[in-house]
Length: 250
Image (tube, rainbow, N blue to C red; front, side, top):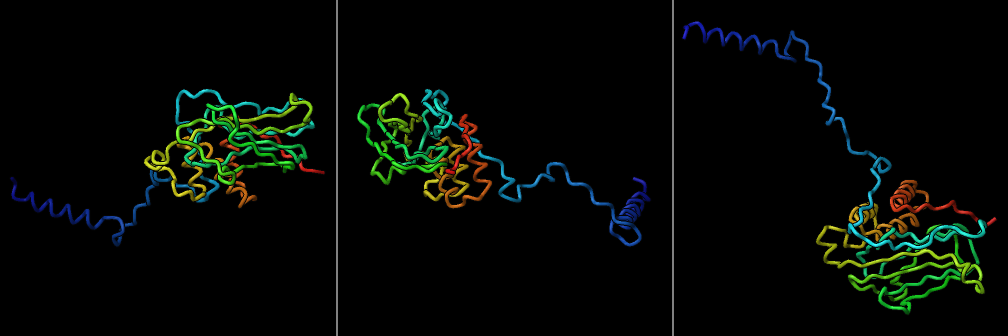
């Protein structure tokens, strides 16, 4: 090797060091733009959070929803069970069943729950006066416990004329309870603490009834929160449930 070569390398290193950005006599290099991926930030507010996706857990599920469409006199209330068009799932032994009523009514509203293998109802409850909006019945309040893996049918019926059952407005669906241990093993919320994160987890793991019941609880406690209403509307839309406007008493 040429004897002057090490000296040349040393001189070059000194020159690079002297001209490095930030050194005296040499302006700092302009900051480079962040890569596109680095510019993507997590949502800074709850309103920017993506809406939950409802993902049924079974690929082949029989159609189970009935009613829900208005018929007859347009002035009659609309009653719509908040159910998917298949057997909806729950992790709870005594879940809540929810429905929507479009306007106040003094006509009796009857909820019926049946074991799909039986004829006699295991619950038949009547409300003589109902207010409009989202409503739920808590099976725990009626001492009802669902068995694991069993399927149940339930209906909400608005009796417009006791002498003409054909005028009844009926809406309902089916519900099945999955084993508690199975849900917890999948990392689902098993503490029963109702919060928005739980709604997301329930919906994304196919637990329709638990997502809707928790959301109803949150909306009841925070009726003016627009995000909660958006989440509800989004979940209902995914199951092709369209609620008419609420008509208040004049």
